[in-house]
Each structure stands twice: as structure tokens, then as C-alpha cells.
Image (cartoon, rainbow, N blue to C red; front, side, top):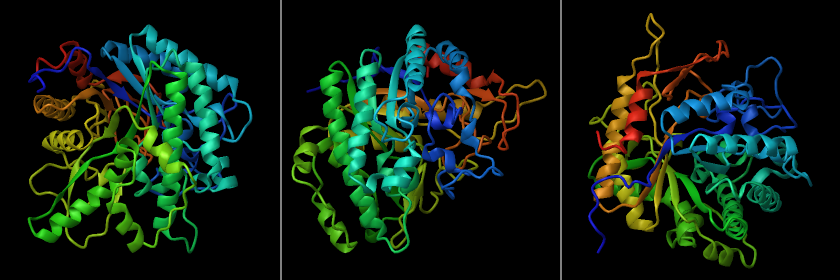
Length: 469
């Protein structure tokens, strides 16, 4: 029987998380090609421009200029005592077209230098290989993950970065929020539906190709980076039945399974039995090659990383709908709500941690959790964000209770420790950071960084390993 634990382990990985496309900017510098994030003027919840319109503003093109300012920003992360910093390698910085024979050395050097800077400042990199950054050329030329050739291109990219950074990166993630293929396939996989296509057929077929790529990337990582750990990453904000009506309860379970299927494949190593009925009822016939299922079964994730922002409730007959925050149904009258309609539920995090650990029995890593709010500087330019401190405090308390429940949690990377571009809406107004960035929704501002009240609070939380809650 496991020993009863009451505190966060000393090895707990505290830190923060961003994505390259939401922070770096420099969208066409130093040989970088276009990735899909470049074509969303209003975030991945909205329209996608196949061609860049010179008359439109695209917030990710400059973002917060992390590409040129990462040393300044990582110095601030060091002040907050970060043990780990999560970001992504933008695939199109390494292979500008995705199908290039040779990588872009300028892109490789950029991440070399950034990882060295993280280590100098006492942080381990936690690196996502694909975070809503599919190269545009792969979308146009091959139809993105509809085409099995993307497995080959992705593995070429993975092999390059594993060889280059194998002694610098201990923690890898394959596809960010891969289960968002079912909610937002454009962002999650560069899949833009064509007229007349069976949406579910496309989503499950492309997801299968990504599952094979995921497993083969795990195989490569274990061969080339034997001291590293590689995990899968899912969006797992939770959903409750709106009432105890049996139909509400059962259909909510079916909705939750739509996300857990992705974990079942990548962690358990096989498609769960309930998949068969879903595919028949939705007219889905996934084409697999001989050996695919053996690959998936053999190479499974070392840990489960996930995002948790909110909970919602589901009523029988409601369409299955969601966005970057998770599934979205009927508001829960018992909990509070942010200006963007995301409901705040710390107990839901404890519930989710228990649900996932009971199901998978592998280490869990909360790699995204945060509060998007409207932060308004006072007359002295200061931001007093007690609401953010309370949000984080309550969610950290929930993690501590889950540890007492026996859940194995590796770490917590708050999203995002510095204000960045919103993935869903393309806004700067929706601010998560402990660090304020002087930039607005139209791209105006000095880019100056300044500390919010939550900055020192989070630094102390990490320094004390959350003993002072």
C-alpha cells in the first residue's frame, strides 16, 4: 500500500507554460516558414485565411516578441523560482515547408540558445513538438494529417530535434491537446473541412495518423534520448451532468469519452471497445495499415500532461461543443465565471486528477491552468490581481488534496506566466500572466514588461513548495 502523502514532493516541477506561436512573433524571420497560426486573425475559434491578407492584422505575427526578448523574459521566470518552463518548438522554424530534406540551421540555433539560457537560469525545458503549428505547406500540398505522408515528415522533424537537443531536454510532449481534433481540427491538426466531407470520418482518420506518429515519436525518443521522458497532452477540463436525470448522466459520460478515447489510445495502447459503436453510428471507416495497432500498443506515453481551466455541465440532447477551454454546455449555477464565460471550479481539478489517475495509473502533469482576466493598471501603472492569486491558490490546494488522495502529480506549469496572444480569440485583452505586457488587441504598445501583484506571490509559492497556502 502506498504511503499517505500530505505535501508536494521536493522534486515537484513548478513553473509556467507558453506556446511558440502565441509568444515568439518573428513569423517570417531567419528562414522560418508559415505555420497555420499565421493565418488566424481572430484566433483558432474563428476564420482561417489560406493566404495572408496584407490589409489585415494578424496578432501572432509579432505576438509579444519573445523571439528577441526571451532572455529578458526568462530572467523574470527565474525571479519567480521556476523549476521548469514549457514552450514549443515551432515545426516551421526547423523545417520551413514541413517536407524539406534539410533543416533550417538558424531555427535550430535559436532553440539551442534558448534552452541554454533556461539551464543557466535553473529551469528544465518542457517541450511540445507540435502546438497548433502545422506548417502551411503541409496543409496546402498534402491536406495535412489526412495524408499518411505527414507521419514521415513529422518523424524527420522529431529525429532532428531529438538528436540536437537530447542532452538539453528531459521532458517532451508530442501533440498539444490532441483531442481538440474533435473540437477544433483546424488548429489542432491543420484540418480544414471540405464541402461534402463527413466531418467525423476526417477527424478520426487524421487522428489515427497522428496516433501512429505519436507512437513512432515515442519510439524515436527512447532510442535517441534514453534519459528523457515523453508524454501525451490532452485538453481535459471536465463536464458534469446538468441534473441527475439518467439521460443527462449517460450522455455526459459519452461526451467525456470523446476526449478520453485519445488518452486510451496513447496510454493504454488500443482503441477502447466503445469506439466501434461510435464509428458505426457516425459512418466512420478508419483505414489502418498492417502494423499500426501493434505500433500503438508497443509505444505508449510515459506520463499524461493535460490542460484544466474549467468545468461545464451537459444536458441530454445538447450538441457536443467546445473550444480551447474544453467542452462547453449549460452554465453551472454553483460556481463563478470569467468575463469569457469560463467557469471557475478548483474542486473540479481534484476530481479530474482522481478520474485520470484511477483510469491510467501513470504520472500526471498539469501543464496548463490559468485565469484569463481583464487587467487594468492603476494610476501608478500597477496591477492588483488578487483574483488571479485566489484562482491559483485554490487550484494548488486542489492538487494538494489530490496528492493526499494518492494521485501521482509530476508538476504544475501555469498558463501563461506572461501575457501572450490568446489562441482561441487572438486577443491580448484576455490576460493570464503574472507579468504584464504593454500591448493591446490592435498591436499597439511598447511591449514593456512589468510585474503584477501575483508575480511575487507565485515566486513565494514555489520557494516554499506551497507549504504556506
